[in-house]
Image 1 (cartoon, chains in turn red, yellow, purple):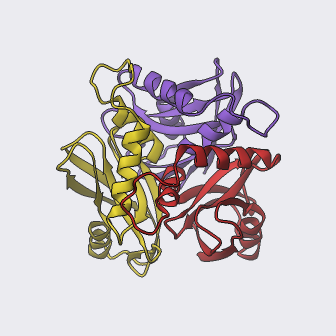
Image 2 (cartoon, helix red, strand yellow):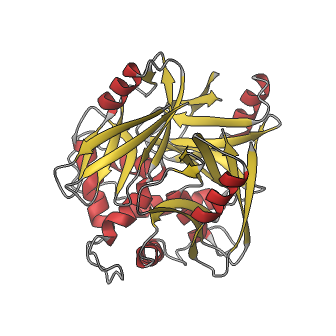
Image 3 (cartoon, chains in turn blue, cyan, yellow):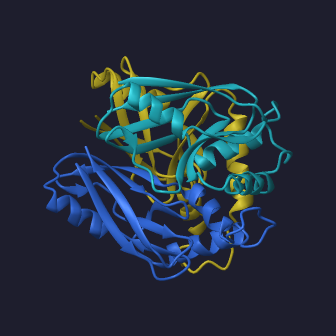
Length: 130
Length: 130
Length: 130
């Protein structure tokens, strides 16, 4: 079953926790046990699973990515967002997650995050429920 | 259903757009809606989804990876291609993609790329169609 | 079918080859052809596929990650393991692997590795067999 989530981002770069939205979507769709594919259909955004508890973890990840991938670096792409494309490929655009009794079967501290690297924009997260 | 794609690379390092080849494979296999796993069965190659429109984006990604992962760095592996193994793990070897009416359900600007980091070689891309 | 693997790590940072354990699990579960999702339910560990033959490859990858992601870097997260969270997101927590006649259909040199970045700990690897 094909499902979709719309996420409005507010900064050029930020992580947005979409765990609750994904779980709500699974509940509405009467998912039970199985798997789902989560896919972000953009080239300057990504998906990652990391700590849901202390927001400083995602702040640190964002700061590190900004240090590692320079904004200006003699890039050939003329739109000025090559750093965003690079970060997107480093984190990746697809996740495959296990579902248990209708909810994402994540670890205690895990959440699913949309990574925005060239916002603010309206982003689409596609979900395929096996 | 198990499917396979052969890709001949021509440089030591390059990105090769395999979107069309994957879509042709799905068409031949009469895929409709669902998912597929795309997997590169090599340790010095990878898969990534990024911009299909301006080739400069993939040039920038390749240049960045070359800057970030030094070719020589006191590595212990004696074959001289540790940089390629490292880049392969950073991008990853498996994608899970949604299929809509027989085609990969990618975003407007997205394409699927085989990343060659130690070519030229003949590479195998394995596809499992759910 | 839901399956689970327990892995006891012994160092703060190490790669543990779990290919044999995964194949044993598939054999016990009478898996035949298809796919499985492998998921590590922790935020300071990851999964990656890379060379199974010369252990120096994984040593080089670990050394590179230690160089790239500083242990101390003005991080905001107070537990002192932000480097581990960052490395986890760079490698990723989920793999989708093809199964052929009951075994992981990996390339000749490929193995599946659990990446421990904040051990020693007891880690859980979740497997969903389609």
